[in-house]
Amino acid sequence: MLNNKALELTEHINVLVQEFLTIHQTLNDAYTGVSKQELNIISIVGRRAGAIMREIAEDAQLAVSSVTPIIDKLVEKKLVKRERSEEDRRIVSVELTEKGAKIYQMELESYMRLSASILAALSPSEQDKFLAFFRKVTLSLTEKHREIA
Image 1 (tube, rainbow, N blue to C red):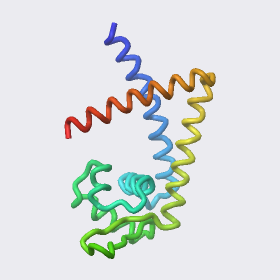
Image 2 (cartoon, one colour; image 1 turned 60 degrees about the vertical axis):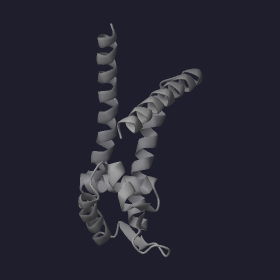
Image 3 (cartoon, rainbow, N blue to C red; image 1 turned 180 degrees about the horizontal axis):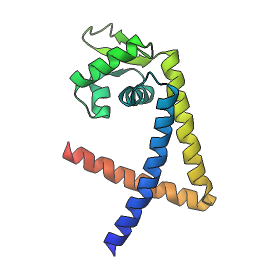
Image 4 (spheres, rainbow, N blue to C red; image 1 turned 90 degrees about the vertical axis):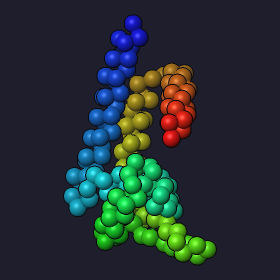
């Protein structure tokens, strides 16, 4: 019985993932000079204003040495900028430029529209329960992730 439920959940998650990937691809198509990896880094920097390279690499699940050339390309494209810490010159933070922030904002708005349409299928009380279940699952997954790391 659990396997049937897990299979059904997997199918529903796949639909959601495809919807989010479609948004990501649409933005990628709109900004043809931006690769999927670059778009992913823009998203991470948008969520973590002033992030340092190590944090960006962790969120992207890449080595810092892999993230550096991506950041270099984004700097060339004027989508992000680097800033050295005044206290410790070894620390470099990354921020979105106005152009990069526009791309991030478009992505965020698209995701918000999708999330709103998901919630619109539910009554207000169902929305509250749905969000409570999602919080519980997310917390469980993040705790397991911390245990592994």
